[in-house]
Picture 1: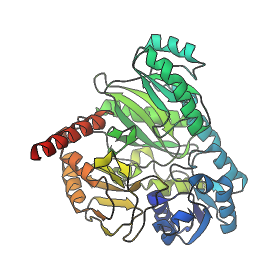
Picture 2: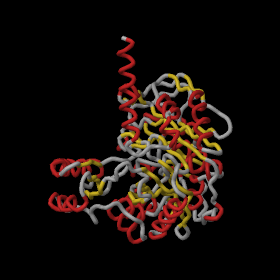
Picture 3: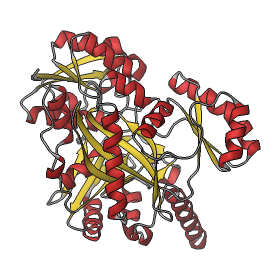
Picture 4: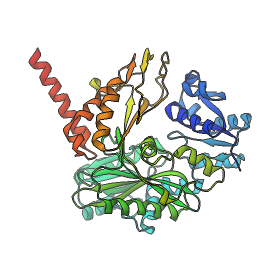
Length: 461
């Protein structure tokens, strides 16, 4: 079935991204929004907009009945969930299909299977993909957790079986911490995901976070190479690159092949990401999870491959076969994405909603800014603080970093504190330029940076 009309069940920059991709395909767009988002950019860009409820996400963007009701009233052919909110909710995917509407994403059974981290590990094992040492499945209780910890050793990670986005994770450095953290992790998982199930994984010291972009049409699967996502704060990605710097080609080939094998195991449809931990010292990689949706960081992959991943998702959902073959996908150059948030870096990244008084976006070759902003827009306090993503491409990583630094210097967002200064400091950092980072790098870097600033202020005083 050809998709002629599409409802965007999300907000912010990803809603803008989806609308632009759909309109480029000649598709009519309908944007749902909460009462707090009536003046957001996506509403202004869409062909039609529908209010689906109060500001609270659970009463609007997470309200399945409200979203599907809007889709029916607008007579759309399909719904794109973006990322976050209902994007990885198998019940929502089922409800969309039951309403006779196309869900732009994987089938509900694939979302359900891969969304359960324990079940996804089993799929990975069947596909021959190495997994992090830990429990074979959900842990039955603290007694079983002790036995697993005895075998794997410490530190060990306690993870929510139904978790995602870096939430529902705790680290135990010894048996006493395991016993105290285990029940807390279970309660946290139950509150966040409605499922208190847990599993355990050994902590890989100084690991890098590398992920592979996949595309499938239910029969064929291709990869669009890998991304480096190691710079993280509180397990939330901050800075992403494509391709992963300093990754040996032999490892890259094996990594990407394993992601395709896993996706084929479930006859994957749409865009998805297979995430791994990579050990620089041993050159070994371990499967973590699959994100069954478009990722925040997808633009860096688009910049090095020339593939519009969102358009490809829409085409495939409408019944088309993949428009690209693996041999057609040849990466070129290097790309970096900086997540620009409305946060005050000097106040422990406190969210800073407010009115945008000025917006100056850098332009030029290899520079892209995916955003929801416009001058005069008031950022509501109810949602994620992401304002946009500055993405820069160049022929080499060094040239990319130089171009990124200039772009950050010309990016002006007036009215609220943002994380632009953080990214400018990172772009100038010698360790970052060498690619010498891992998943714990940024938090240590921030601690040292704040210490230097405090010392400098004391000396001035």
